[in-house]
Length: 287
Image (cartoon, rainbow, N blue to C red):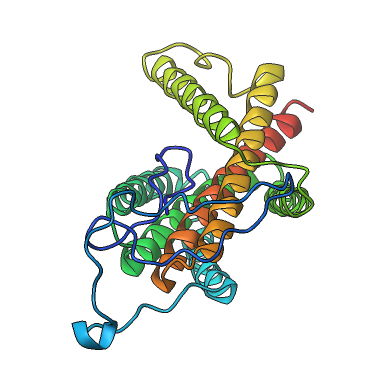
């Protein structure tokens, strides 16, 4: 199963030898009444293998919702822990801004590198995923400390509550089937996210080469609108994550893939938090 971070492509469930290692359960009817087929099954299966005892390999247990919850809690807890420590140990003020920002940027680059390595691996690596979470937490701690010091002491709490509200809303909408994750929905979200990231990169380049305020996505009404679009995209990716977890449970994905589910969910939550923090910072700085 693939990462949910909008930077990454979604590659589907993996198996160590390049095809699916789990057995599809019986097709389940959808709300429209049609039967589901396993989208992850190998279309060209090889000869039947012997049983696990004869092959000398133990069967990989199927993933459960408890596995997803535990791994997601561990990954998100790592983010929160390192964010809190970096906030306390790397305060952003007039005397320490250079050092704090330097460490924050370095942590963000390391987190991105680790996430890219995991994104292109066939099998999940808990060490890579937790390492990503730790460095991402350092970056978030520095950014949150700066927003709290320069914008408003309460802006971080508001962004956290906003992230929780968006996540709960998407979960309710998904469970009640108000959001239908179809192939068309998936394609639209990927295309929209690609355009969003291109605009982000262009804004950063314009700012880097001297254009005051870049393309205007960091302030004013345009910045608020851009941030709200970012939150909406994050919500859409969260729906894709829920769909992938549901499919994994339906088709009996191996337990180890619960780490990939955790990785995808946490990267999406980080995305939503940063966009919420952007919008709230602009709103409160303009007042």
